[in-house]
Image 1 (cartoon, rainbow, N blue to C red):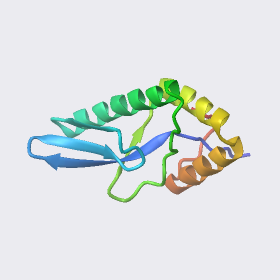
Image 2 (cartoon, rainbow, N blue to C red):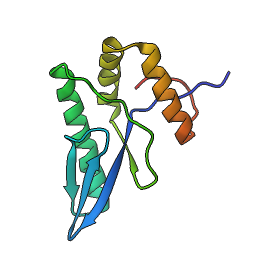
Image 3 (cartoon, rainbow, N blue to C red):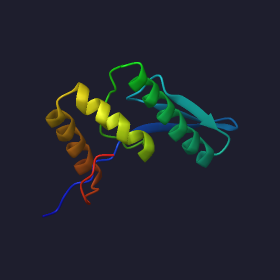
Image 4 (cartoon, rainbow, N blue to C red):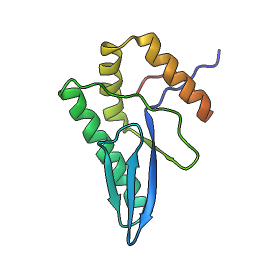
Length: 119
């Protein structure tokens, strides 16, 4: 039986702006960062995403699940040490069935089948 992996990965727009790369998230308008290189911008994006999501858990705020990425967006994964508590928090606040359905549809859209785990 093939199982599906569920990843907490948000689409981000990374745009060159002079000597910087600006990163914004469509699903999380309060998360943004930059870097002097594309790689540094991605690294900073993961840190910014992790920090804001953890703070949203602490403040008991609604966390939007990632929507399907647009063609011009890059996938920025939430680090596993943050994704686990965020997913547990979201499962407690919302219907587990709804969350798993949304994540399954997003995973199917990105074609990432593997062993099932919620991280």
